[in-house]
Image (cartoon, rainbow, N blue to C red; front, side, top):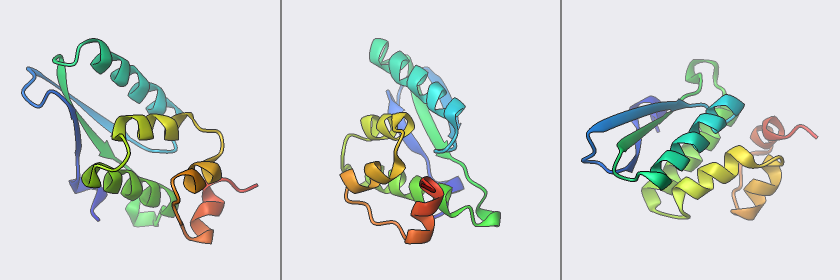
Length: 118
């Protein structure tokens, strides 16, 4: 899956404003920005079309970022779990392993170590 080519679209696709978010799923600042956008959409759902692009350095084989971005995009495409809540939960969880177990995700052992080395 080409992460840079795929976009998640939220909000009103016909809204006069477009917000583009480049999110790294392991970035605390990205999580705060996403939460702010989620609050904006909850208050004014017609305000904007929100385009999310997941970022990770695919050239350096950043396995954890690529894996979780692919997982989240896959959930969006499948319509599985409420995507906005799933992404919010991801950003707000302290234990990446329990998140993976909760949703029955089976990342490779090498990748899960990058989530939570303990």
